[in-house]
Length: 312
Image (cartoon, rainbow, N blue to C red; front, side, top):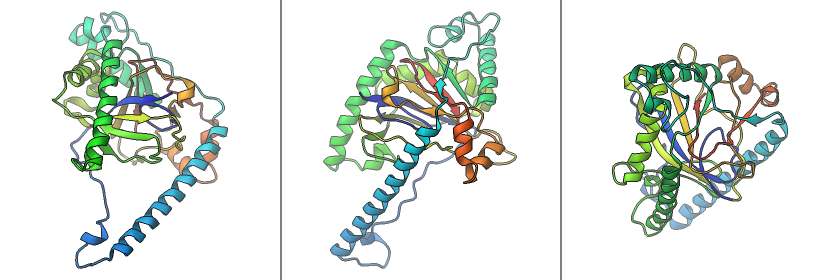
């Protein structure tokens, strides 16, 4: 099977819509070494350039092997994992708790704010939160079809030299059978519809506003696809814990199809976005212990549901 989605990865197959928020503007940059043939004041032979590329490939392959082996070891540690359940709240005047077509769309503006604040409280404590019905089933299906077509077209455009790979794909580890496809904005109605449903009609936008205020920045909008045969990634934080600073980035994975166990669902370790957890995770003598002893949650998300998590 193949899945379309993203996170603290244990993926083997799917497609997820990815949204990243933070509290302040920033630029995303990739530090790339210049090709030998274009480095200043350096003239490289074709043989040397080819040889350097071969060495880089070999180093990457060795790095991949280490990551894969570590991921397989961690799989033996995580024996107490349970599905991440949807959080439930009660807000007077908000109607039923939920996502698309539920509380945020039927309730008042005041109740929607309270709803976002209540969910944000859970997210701050647990570090991860599940919301159902963030996208309607028809929107999720249509968007998934569009993104698979976009991936096919992007692969052809890159092969034909029309665009550079960095213009279509973000960097991911364990590249085999996995890609992080960036999604163009303002060109397709289905993309606009999906953003409207997830940010305005579901509690997601209210949660981000409650945490970051009106100045919340949407950093990235993309789709992570893991195909059959992709390897399990290691457990990791996306950003470090910094003393004196609160959350700096939240990631929202929206499932574009039902995610099942054979797809390798994302694994989260709740309440590890703390100073103590990060210190234990960085210590080689206690790292395995925190992975083994923290009750893990699996992203077995129904279509249209999402997992929002603190990047730490």
